[in-house]
Image 1 (cartoon, rainbow, N blue to C red):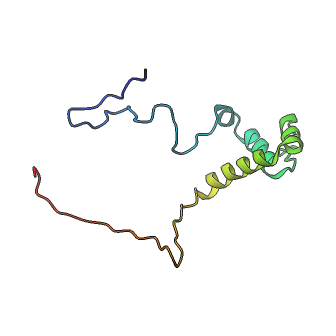
Image 2 (cartoon, one colour):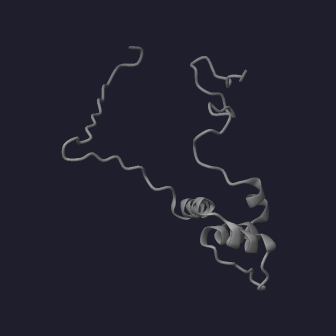
Length: 117
């Protein structure tokens, strides 16, 4: 059974607590292997996204770069490209549209109340 995050008397999360302990949803995190390898990991990711072999500044090609450039599936390439694009440009906003027969309607209600009501 999962433990619930600690909250104060008003129900707010205490510092250091999260309501999403399993990390489900939210912004995807970079894997630890990526963070610890810096430019080499970026070369691997770019090779996977593009299928091109990317050498370092000395012309050296990591075996992992060559492997992912030649063996990645279309699904893996798309995921790698999406990760690179999201990091470079930010996630694209979700757009909700309707059509002529079924337009999207939204309303916002603002009410001002006195504290304690």
